[in-house]
Image 1 (spheres, one colour):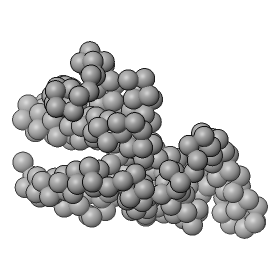
Image 2 (image 1 turned 60 degrees about the vertical axis):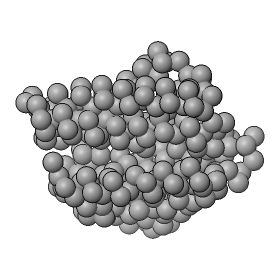
Image 3 (image 1 turned 90 degrees about the horizontal axis):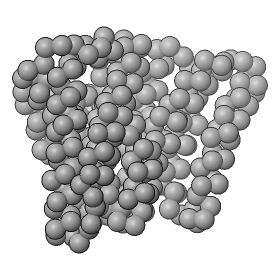
Image 4 (image 1 turned 90 degrees about the vertical axis):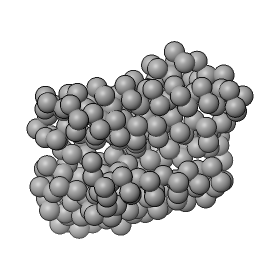
Length: 267
């Protein structure tokens, strides 16, 4: 077991817990925006090996997360919907304004980065702002980080069948163990909040949601790994000892966030 990995997790989890439990939605939105900036910075550093991304627009987009609950709730869907074509419009204006010194590849990588980090993370802010959001957001966290913890443990212990060259250290056993472990954690959490917080969530629904979120999160992990393989780096940075960069730590969480939000609106 990686001692640095365990130590970082033990130190970081209480901080995340305190912020999400104590902080109001505006504070949490601001902190999500800061996390997005860190993740975007790591992404830009990585793809700068292959392109010249439009960094100013990426960082500016990150700040929009801090405004998500300042915008009237009746206008959020309209603003988010218009944001996608507006960002694409600005990127093509950049191509025109620079006489193609910024080219199609540059804006494509930039657009993917903005969508990947900003829009996906925005759904975490939206979950946190929902009714019972402070309870529901932990399902997303347990699905992502629970999968990561159990996949790592099971893979290190009994993992024999490699899953994909995209992430050579991951095994089939680890992926399956990660999903089972995450679902068990989510069921235990459901028992706790139903018993002590007066919730009434269906265990059957949570099993289904847990399986989907865990699998989507693992695809998110592979997606982040595919970018790293493409630019030939091991980690996005060394910000978090034993885990790599911020994007290494949240890759699965942000990938499953839109799906989690959709499921939670139906609970």
